[in-house]
Length: 227
Image (cartoon, rainbow, N blue to C red; front, side, top):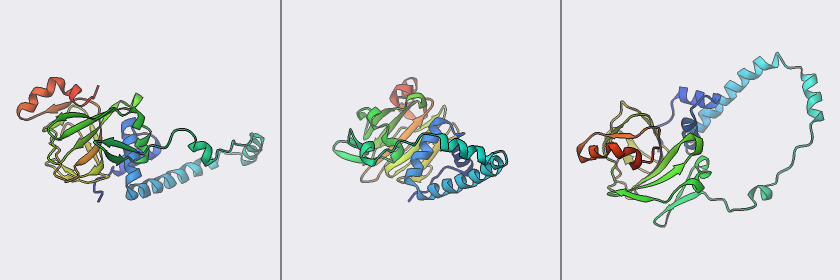
């Protein structure tokens, strides 16, 4: 059950096109998985669209607009067969023979996802090149897998793709949208039998806060491929 969602202001910014690219990407991927947020976004789009139309309608010369439309060339028809011609549609990523189906928004990045590499313990990571948006990671926690306790020098956006995990603050399930900042300290871990796969975007290196993990701080940008 999805319990964590973008807040109303974040959704309004998303609908109005004012979200930062990383936030827009993560909200779009969450929307693919969350019927509740799809409904909220559709209502916002309708409400905002009606408001814009009411303002713009006062300025439009509909006679001129219709005349201009009739002068345009006919739109090129694109059939389903044409659109799907070429490489087969890829919807999943794989780790040790296990397939993880991704939300529609993230599928375009499958070809830009690196191989999974073992980090430590029961923790695996695959870097994702988001182009101008930045770099991100798929992180898989096998049962018993744990990310060392850390806080954030920037923001950490996380979407649970498959499975469940906890972090000492809350319990998260498939589809949950999570935003962490410098005020949050947590240690994600999974005790689920199937483990947990998350997609995470971090705009600055993590800062490890406990035990021997603090020795990793000078190398944290390498640990999670944040640069």
